[in-house]
Length: 199
Image 1 (cartoon, rainbow, N blue to C red):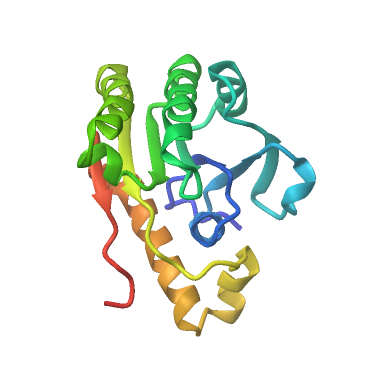
Image 2 (image 1 turned 30 degrees about the horizontal axis):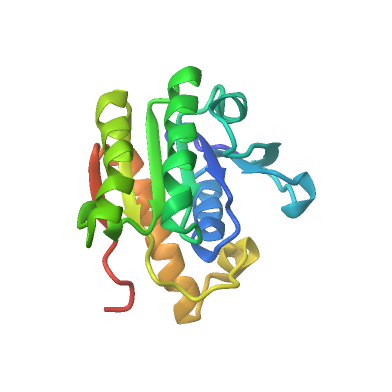
């Protein structure tokens, strides 16, 4: 039963397959949000109460906009993507969110090359993305993906059997921190590094 005192948000998560993505889905469902897993293969993730699987890729802004229409917040889990693939994917996310009218965008990946370029190649690679973010008008947040144990799944974060192992606790703590960012409206148009869990 839904707690009427809890504000319900419609969240979309692109590529929710790593441990943080799975923890984010589990934590959002626990908070009674509506969650859409935006995937390129509908058989890649099992639907469950409160979670719907919807086709969605990052190939174009049109594909993104069709996937995110009606959502309040988008999370894109990009931690496994090489830097050179990030600008076009992020461009599709930015333009798709604008087209669909989704105001809040979290890009979760590795951004050191963008925030502190080491050479001219990094600087050139990041210039267009930084400009697109700044002029978009979206409330975006770049999140530096934390180092977590891989292979965790939604069921590992079940409240019926609260996570007791350190790896699950760390992933869940990061996911809860991201949802708190949404609730409190923090770090808009900024880069965010989650505190290393376990320290």
